[in-house]
Length: 184
Image (cartoon, rainbow, N blue to C red):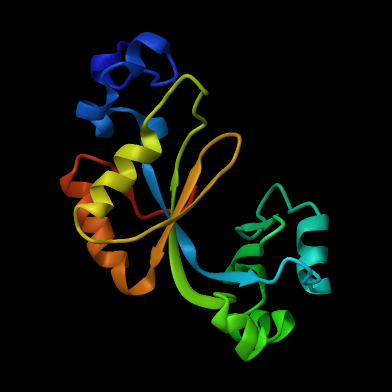
């Protein structure tokens, strides 16, 4: 299949002009994720709550399993957690499990925020394909929509505040992205 009619964007030749033909590449479809997400930024010495440890330790069901997304990053400055509420933990349960960082910590920028909504680039994308997240974020930045992005080996997840979600969908579609409102 040639690049002009929906070829493989992971082919080096096809990848060179993808920006002007975003909707022609099925593995660059923007998949709307079904759940809401919660983002937490906690002090670096915070412990990961047991329900989240269990969630990321247990392999998800391959067939017919619930959508799952949880990522944890720890640096010397923070512990960041992004988790979908479809993990059978509601936002209020997650907030209670993570605990309140307290007034001193909140003054340092620690806290829990949500709801967020997420998009996923279908992928997988090869490492030689550059600029996908840049093009995506430029589109939303032009509409004053901020993002929180997480990259995995295969793809990118891009979160926007729930209040910006409809505007983000419209902006992406107008920019040539194929926004798909169905889980895969």
